[in-house]
Image 1 (cartoon, rainbow, N blue to C red):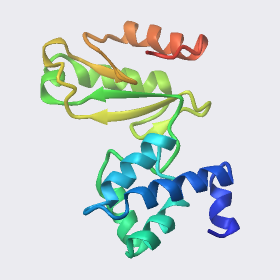
Image 2 (spheres, rainbow, N blue to C red):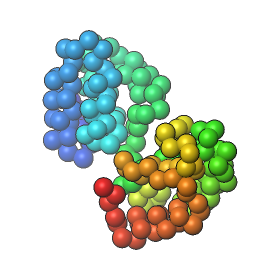
Image 3 (cartoon, rainbow, N blue to C red):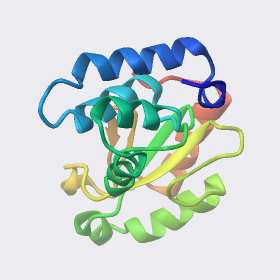
Length: 169
């Protein structure tokens, strides 16, 4: 890797980690998706500097790798906020008033879906079913699903996440 690619990451150690991930999986059939998952699990997103590493090891183009990343909505190409809030937009939640709730969420955070608050505390993501249909509208923060959300409940949650810097476990 050249210094330009390394400069995108926080450190040379991160670039070495990407190299280790890629080389440990590259020999498996269909290795690109497992590599992308492992890198995102490690960093929270797919750093730009990882694309040429994957392309070189997998003997494909950077455009091929980027195409897979951009095709799957699960993969992020930007570092997410400290907390990722996923808002269910599926029909069952819509029937429970999620469209009005979504408007409130976007107004409260001052961002839209697939954006992060300026202080890097919260990223907002749309999802299409959290499997919590009977108690919509629902959201997920980390690995916790919360149902029967209301604007007041959401405001309290955001205040807790941002004021006290809580980590949901």
